[in-house]
Length: 412
Ligand code: ADP
Ligand code: ASP
Ligand code: MG
Image 1 (tube, helix red, strand yellow):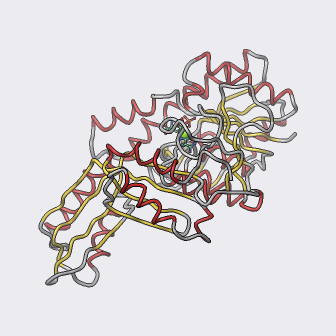
Image 2 (cartoon, helix red, strand yellow):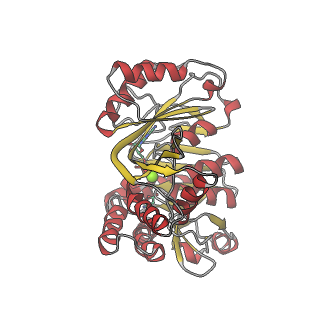
Image 3 (cartoon, protein in one colour):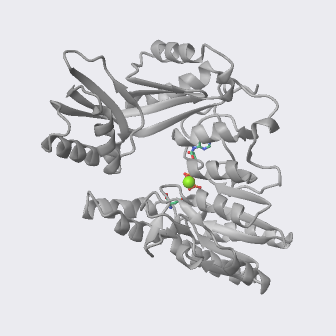
């Protein structure tokens, strides 16, 4: 029988009523003749609560134990979803990551999927089971330890299962009815897109649009998974939501197609670094060894052999970055006067494949922010995106004014 993957995010399984509603949606697809793999997130708020407990217990925690704790929310919803389906007379059972087993590498808290054997679940489908409920976000390392795939990782579990089982489609059920030109929660004028190209979705996700985890989009693109985002709160037709697809399938597109933001950014500046060949390699090597995800980097002009080096990273990694830099200073590997952290910044980005062929987008973006009196602290560009770091208090204003300036409320 054809296989369908259906993923339900945190708000879609937030309580028993919502789980029942989701299970009914699954029942509809089973009745159409699909064998269904359901991927569930933890109930909304649960993962955050557990992350809080870990941070309070151990600020520079052992990531293996972090994973042991924060993976547990999905175990609860997987079991409850299987029970709910059974109550509806749909043959179902649950799987935790290690039972599949969904094998990942050993990069705890940000693990990558290496293998999903299909025989175990397929054998059960062969015996008449109609729904395999799999706990999202979690796997098992080659060392036999529980791993997690990074925040939002159930999306990636879903796409990886769709690829492994050659599913007809991967439906991501969430609390919005598709992918919008920007987060509909902060811009009233955000417009739902019927289709979005993989490349654009990839940029939007990596720049903060949390509707899909970045890695899930990468996998969908690589394995050509038919990926759809839709609401678990509305009755759905087969055409509902937003289809994430190849660029060629989209006829008309704006130059800028989306505005993304990332609220929890920090800007760190190493003041007066002794400038010598290899200094950048030393700084960013030790940050990387400490598990800091550096995003933007600027090195100022060097004067009398010393320079300032600025980089950005997520706010929750500031402590790690400070520790790594202090250790490098103590060991004499890096010589600098001071490390200044500005934790009140946010990143706002404009994304569009049309930028490849049209100039003036950066100028328009900077002019729009200038007209609102917003100062730009750092700029980064690539072929299809422009990102700026600004004071966090202006983030919403920046998103809304850029959405207006690029007329994203109007279709191409
Ligand atoms: P889930 O728990 O279902 O995985 P998430 O909270 O991870 O849901 O993702 C859905 C949220 O993503 C929406 O509620 C919305 O606020 C946010 N979001 C950010 N950018 C966008 C966008 N461009 N389009 C749709 N939703 C977006
Ligand atoms: N529960 C995990 C998180 O909140 C994974 C997910 O929901 O996708 O990040
Ligand atoms: Mg999510």
